[in-house]
Length: 368
Image (cartoon, rainbow, N blue to C red; front, side, top):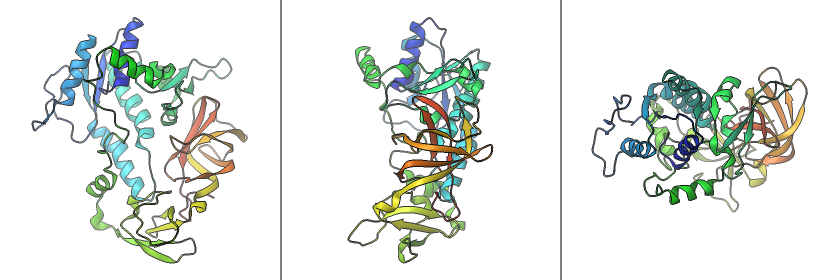
């Protein structure tokens, strides 16, 4: 239970189906209150905030549902498994997606283990996605897109293994977000549920540059460097490649009659490459650390649709395996802002076939 409307609705749906439900809340933010114990109401922060403590709100919500609530402190593991790799990726010119790491390592890794130690058989979350029973032919659980295309979160879940999918329950996969919000309003919860954030959970809204500057050891780095065009002409100076991402237009500080966009980051040369809008489109990419979810690893090229970021409409492509954990993707039509560090996720209709991390090529462009 995160305390949001989706996890709250998930709990009520499970109870209505007759399941024995208890809530588990994981503390992962570096500023989370220390010393929380199972069943404890002592969840105050070290200072008195101007509003009610989030832990207290969560306890009240769980109490209203008449389900027990336990807190699990995963801050150390989250720092090591999610935040540290996130920071390291930015230092190397990548734009990582920490949710994709968090789901298999933390939520359906350590949190699932903790829930099982407390007697749970399965772990339900408020994700908008669906899990289908094993396919008779392959005997593999299948991950699918949600009914609500605007809230579908299957993109973030491709890293789950078969055992994790077997333990996962996504009650909201067949629900629309507007239905969940309507339920919250009718049930009287709308005013007590914290407003949802669309940002990364451990970074304050809009605080990417400040978070990176606070957490990265910039004293040992050559932070500033050149901004060059595709011909290598010097156009300006950047403030550190960690503050830029492919497709970015604002903050370049380049005077020009037509806008420039970031088209590549070269960490080795500490260089930001820029181009015009048309230079953002690429037809090919390579993905590494590939995980095959709903199907066995293919040995031949497969036509499918590929999503290169969460809000990207899956585009037709041919995915060709390159060994055990790498693939080459060729789109039927060039795609905008292929970004190293983000995930490329492969779909056959609603079925999630697998996915991997878009890799950085030697020229720093991230594509072929």
